[in-house]
Image (cartoon, rainbow, N blue to C red; front, side):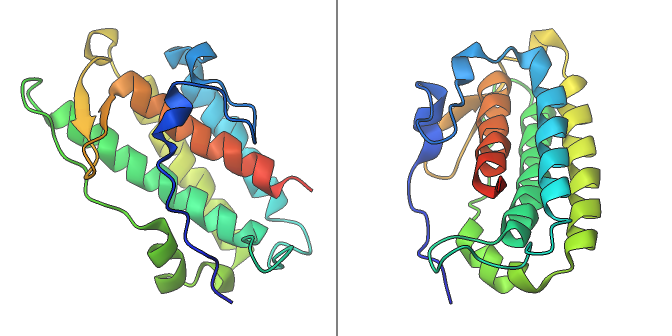
Length: 175
């Protein structure tokens, strides 16, 4: 059964605490993002080992496996977005391609993937994006990029927005 797509614009999490998972972007130092991202990815990886990882808790909620595949792809997408910002000359604002997470979940058959493989790919993707965020020089943290809907991000706000996604999905899969 298909989940109703999430059409919320989650950029508000950069301005106020998320009432669902408790994430407070303003309280997160940029330097803490890589380690917190790795910890969150590891927690989701551990959840993927559960016997019920393929089971949706209800008709409106993804399974742990689907969340794990989504978070793996989030890591990949944000690694690409960070690279676009850093490759720009600083005067131009690169635009991020639109990514429909719900269409991707259906097209890539998240719920049919192998949990162990997803856990491995998640770990690899998280390592890569965490290293990329950790390697950004402090004088480039204000570089900007824009989502296809026009939402602007600096490297710092992009890192916090990315981290919220991981933290939020740890909240979703805890059980």
